[in-house]
Amino acid sequence: MLKPTHHIALAGAFSAGRTPAFRFCVLAFVFLWFCLGAVPAFAKLKPLAPSEMKEATAQQGFTQFVMDNNTARMFLDIHIETYTTVNAFSAGYYEKNGTTGWDQQWSQVSIGNSTSDDMDIDGLVFMADFDGTTNDLQRVVIGSNRLQGDLTATFNSYSGTYNNALVGGNWEAVDTSRELVTEPSVPGDPTPSTTFAFNSDGYADKDMGLYFIINMEGPQQGIQVVAGFDEQSLTPGQWWDKP
View (tube, rainbow, N blue to C red):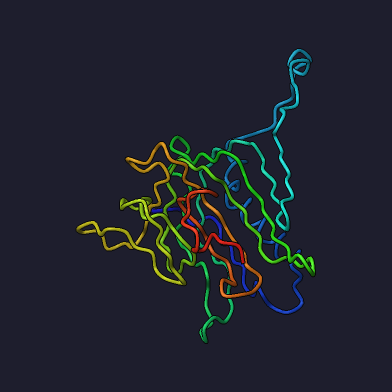
């Protein structure tokens, strides 16, 4: 059983009076907190000795920023190792198709399994799509192209796409919209918890990423999650596409 530690909720993501910049900041904070929340528990700052400082140099390519047409992309070449537990994570509460509810509503979330079996994240990606005429912010994408480790949760409501290989199936995209995510049932296990295994057997050599996407308007409006794919491997025409 996970120890309840934190609750994250992002409601009214598209309510009046909230600017796109505000929504971007909120989502960026949520993702970074989500990934890094447990780091201070077993990490601390350590001053460098003069001899060590002489050897310290800036790493070329640590940060990359590219503006391609109307899309801005920033890549941070950093490595993160984290074990984080979250009691509840909810995002995107608004009316959709006549029903008010959550795009994402997860409970008993564990990123990694323990401090000795954590989640490894290689690189962080931040993207923003703008309207070419009005320069309005249309979409924000925050995540990583490569994760190694387990993400376990009860996905009571999941909107977006996940790779069926994460739950022991074939390499294929599964699209959902505010649906419960399940995996093959285990006899005698009534708990609907699901483990996304980012280093799944048979696919350990493939990049499996995790992305939070916020679309401001259009048919894909809302907060979606893409799990188990990087920027290049998701089939065109699905949730990864630009608005």
